[in-house]
Amino acid sequence: MTEAKKRVLSGIQPTSDSFHLGNYVGAVKNWITMQEENDAFYCVVDLHSLTVEQDPTLLRKRTLTSVAQLLALGLDPEKCTLFVQSQVPAHNQLAWIMECVTGFGEASRMTQFKDKSQKNGNDRTVVGLFTYPMLMAADILLYQTNFVPVGEDQRQHVELTRDLATRFNSKYGKSFVVPEPYIMKATAKIYDLQDPTSKMSKSADSASGLIDLLDTPEVNTKKIKSAVTDTGREILFDETNKAGISNLLTIHSALSGKSISELENEFAGKGYGDFKGAVAEVVVETLRPVRDKTNELLSDGNHLASVLKQGAEKASEVADATVKHVYEVLGLIPRA
Ligand code: ATP
Ligand code: LTN
Image (cartoon, rainbow, N blue to C red; front, side, top):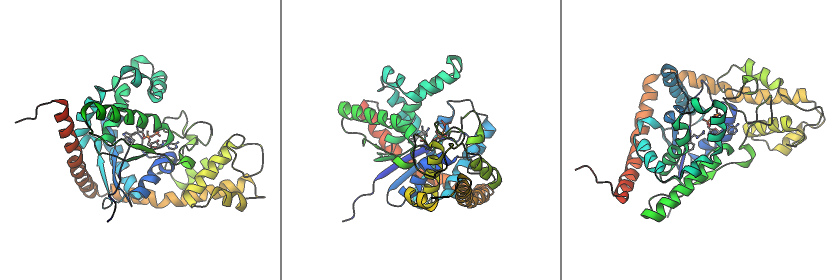
């Protein structure tokens, strides 16, 4: 007898014109691997992106570009369910329920909220930024998810989701699978090329340390060749003393499939210049077909629309069943 497939769910925000290398290596690469043996659901979380003011025209464009990039990177709609969060209303329905089981104190402890609200100031922080993790919990719990592939920065949100699921189950009877974060230690955090102690992020102050998947080979090569390193000359993995080189080793290894020690051997006796050239080449060659394929997909709006229609239908089926059960156990009366 074959074992039932495990459920996988993850999401990514459509908040920039291109995903960056951290998103790919830290998260989406695992999504692609996991679609093979699991029942995987992946969503572009457009509702989450509204926690920061968005220009409507740009949001529409970025949502479609996100979907196109995910397909270009290797998600296959025959193997996984790819959808846009706002097209499945169950996400909002369960989010409210999650808000009603989350303590104000526990929500206040979310470090992402603390960091982002502090950065923006009280007057420019919306309540949605505070309730963001409860919407994320809904995203996950609706699908009876076993594994959530994310980068390290999302671990706390998945832990909160686990607490909420456990609490709900013990009060109202088993309603949710308690999910586990799926975080690959080696690639959980890709660092900024100019500041190899902070994570590569689209909200960084400067774009010079950020590799955009859709940027030109010339721009990306230049950024890698200007990456900050140390004053030594050896190519060794040492995150404390050689943060920049270690980050480049992680990137090369993730994209080329060679292990870190293989790379250390290959570049023994060679200089930083040679090594950076090799990293640039691996990155550029990995991204070239992704860029071409994304543009090709974007030129066929009908295809994207049909992928999303099919995705939303499949997602709704599973998600609506969870909401129906949850409403019932809470004592909400179904519409006649
Ligand atoms: P921001 O930094 O502006 O908050 P982001 O770049 O983290 O945004 P998200 O859409 O929030 O982008 O994240 C998508 C996925 O990429 C998440 O699973 C997140 O953990 C992962 N991720 C983001 N940045 C990195 C990084 N530097 N290294 C590894 N994983 C990352
Ligand atoms: N908060 C996540 C995006 C996200 C997500 C999810 C990830 C929203 N819903 C559900 C995993 C599962 C982030 O990457 N910033």
